[in-house]
Image (cartoon, rainbow, N blue to C red; front, top):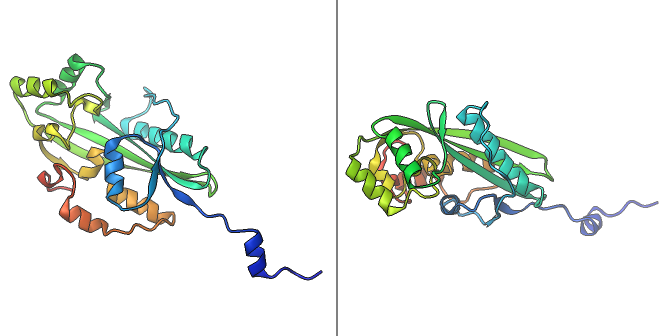
Length: 229
C-alpha cells in the first residue's frame, strides 16, 4: 500500500494550533497591564472559589490561587494558553484580603500605616492540550507613610478601597500613601509584566513589544512615581 503524500496528509489532518491567549481574570487592572504587551487575548471569568488556607504562607497562597484560576479556565479552553494571577498583601505572615466594609478598610490601613509590608503576585500558565502548568511568584516590599487620620478619612470617603486587597490602590489615590517600593511596580498593581512576558515566551508565545522599553517609559498610572522596578 502506498504511503500518503505528507502534504496531502497534513491537509486531511491539520496540525492543532494553539488558540489565542486567555486571561483568567475579570480584573480591569490585569486586563490593562496585559494589553501593554500588545498580545491578542480573551478575558474569561474563572470558575474558581478563592479560599485562604491557614496553613500556607502568603507566597504559597498566591501560587495556589493563581494556579487554581488558570486551571479552572484551561479545562474549558483546552487548546489555549491560559494565564491566571493572584495578588496578596501580607504583614509578616498575616494576609490582608479585600475589606468587607469601610470600618475594616480603616483597620487595615491603620495596620499598614508607617511600616512596611509585602505584596505577592503569582502568575500561572496552563494549557491542557500541551500539558503546560507553570507558576512563578513576584514579591514587592512596600513602605507606607505615616499619614494622618484626616488623610485616612478622606481616602475612605473616596471609596477607592472597595475591592482592593489591603484596602488601597497603588495605581490610584492610594499611591500617595506609599513612601517607596522595592520590586516591580506592575507586580504591586496585579500583573508583573517582566515575569509574565518571560513565561509566555518560555512556552512559545512571542511578545511583540520591547518589555524593557515599557519599564523605561512606565506607561501606567503612578508607575513613574516609583524608581524601583
